[in-house]
Image 1 (cartoon, rainbow, N blue to C red):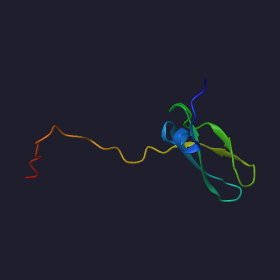
Image 2: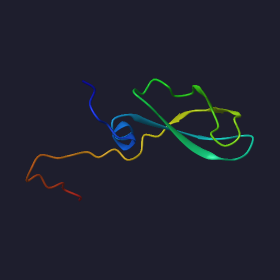
Image 3: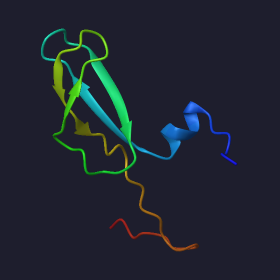
Image 4: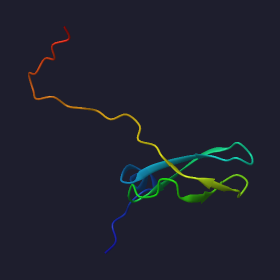
Length: 73
């Protein structure tokens, strides 16, 4: 039996890639299951021109042990 998953669930569990179309200037995004698609060719969702996918790493959060206070001196 297949699990019921919404489109937003797929986005939450995949890697985000972004692009800017050289033909029309559209900024778009696509999602893939892993992080091996950096530099791959894609297709602009507005005009259909070829685009280059860039991994959108976003913000990386570093967690400290509970109670740890960083010395900023």
